[in-house]
Figure 1 (cartoon, rainbow, N blue to C red):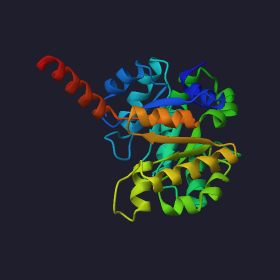
Figure 2 (tube, one colour):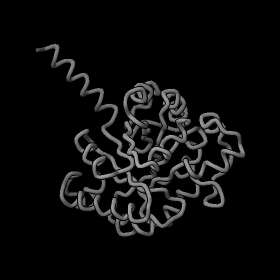
Figure 3 (cartoon, rainbow, N blue to C red):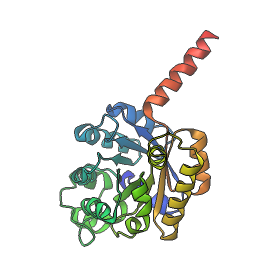
Figure 4 (cartoon, one colour):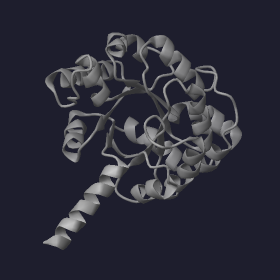
Amino acid sequence: MSSIRALADRMRSGTPALSAWCGIPEPAVAGLLANEGFDAVTLDMQHGGFDFAAAARTIPLVAAAGKPSIARIPVGDFATAARLLDAGASAIISPMINSAEDARLFGGFVKFPPLGQRSWGPYGAMSLAGRQPADYLAEANGYSLALAMIETREALDNLDEILAVPMIDGIFIGPFDLSIALSNGASIAPEGAEARSALDHAFARARAVGKFAGVYAATGETAGSMVRQGYDLVAVGFDAGFLRAGAQATLSAAKR
């Protein structure tokens, strides 16, 4: 199995995927994390430092470790989704998908016809997938995943319509932004009762229609609870946090 197909195959088998989260736009950082026990690496182009060039250089390095890459694109930059898939990304997370129309616009760049309007040019992806053009065209819609990020009241209100869009493979929930939206900007409480209730609702609606459910978890403990709940994809922690935690642990040991 190639790394590019591994994520969809893993999640369809019912085996959850734990992804590292990377915002430092240095391919070696993602490559180091890919060689750890993570099942995938997510490259953040919305709030992290990745641009397309950095992401395109990183994806093959992650694949060299046998792991799939996921990319979160900037808000509304749907055309970049297709370019990232051409470079060999396995899934695209699009933030601020608040309506079925947003979902259709996003999904159209992820899926080839007849589902979407993705144009042809997946030269890096074909190499990583080990497929010839005809085979890649026939199979890519099945393993190039479109994940709509749910992080606002509007998205929650329109969740069933978003999930009903054929090009959308699942949702990815942002607990931090969701908690800000639900509190009308009063607090950041991803573990609070209101945010957890919204997460449970979104998870249940995705499950009800047979689509993937992913979520971000700030800590390993939270990630473990999400895995036990049954999420298909859990992104845990972030690269700068891993670096700080490692430095702090090493210094603490040295000073003892």
